[in-house]
Amino acid sequence: MKKLVFGLSVLMAAGAMASECSVLYSTYSEKYYVTNNGNRMSDFTKSLDRAVDDAYELSSYGVCNQPTPKKECKLMYSTYSEKYYLMLGSDRISDFKSRLSEISDVKLKLVRNGICYDNSSRTTCELKMSTYSNKWYVMKGTDRVSPFVTTIKDANSYAQALADEGACLVSGYQPIPRPVYSSNDDVNYVYDFRGSAENLSERIISLVKTLEPYINNAHEEEMDDIKKKAARLKARAHTRDIVKLATTARELEAIMDRNEGYMMELMETDALDRLSIELITISENLKAMLDYLQVQSQDYM
Image (cartoon, rainbow, N blue to C red):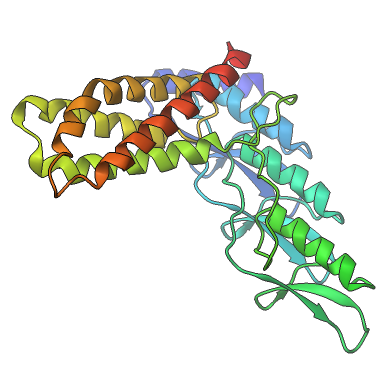
């Protein structure tokens, strides 16, 4: 692959604009590969890790940009092969796995490497019994999503495991915290800092937009900067570079602190006093996320 990368990097230096590399899966060869603008840019490989490494090597040479997630990896079940697999949009992005834990490991790698978002289905899983075989199974909408098992207890275990993976909801069951991993294989996070970054950025932008009719000219530029930095935080919520995410959060916290007094003054009016609690909550949530990111980002420095 080195010769290919070298030749393409020369073309990039000549003025071509780098676009994003994508890691795809061939259902014909059952192997992963890297594409850029519809062109295959790597060898076929059984190893997802190898394909991801190829994509990042291409990125390091300026041939393309790093993969960024745009869709969910949806956990599916084939009633033909009685195996689990993953879909990215309309494309299968994994081989078939007999065990739910095995496909969960594949999904984790895809999410961690920016290929897709984690699954977050809002459809309920239900326990059913086949009157033909007298065995239990799990249904999600109109689809069977588990093998046939002997007892209702076993079927319920499948349903809860699927709920833990974000593949469906189970009435009366609270899924375990969804771990969020970094590229450090030894780190297991239970705090969804990426989801928090997205949520906080949206709340901050909404808050400033509500205040806009009351902002004077002297503070207008600062308020615009808050929105811009919040938008940048949202854009970087799923970046592979956790240090960059922490830096963006730190910049946003600094400008929020600098303008908190002015925003609280605006909220002393009857029309805006309801927002004071939201501002305080946002500030505390942002500080908590930043404290977390500062600790975790040390692993990358």
